[in-house]
Image (tube, helix red, strand yellow):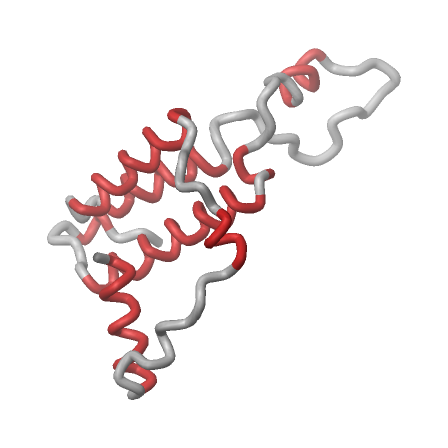
Length: 133
């Protein structure tokens, strides 16, 4: 629904009646299987539900948790002496690769973020505090 509404809004802005919006899918889009791992599907469902309820801040929080996670991020220099710090080991724990490392998944997540941004403009929340920054 969001994508159709976005396409219609773009067509209105261009004044072309929607003719330009019907372009061919990209190769990556055609090749995508549509199957998502449960560890990605569940957060995406939560993001969509929050957006449907016009809780855009909550949806954005879900997007951030999915895309960058809660892992510690190195800030500045992580090795300042000859001894490696114990906290540095925690930065690289985890056997699974980062979710944004996969090109197709990254593009899907970026499109979710763009849909959230459009949806809050098209269907503004009743509570002004639920607008994303």
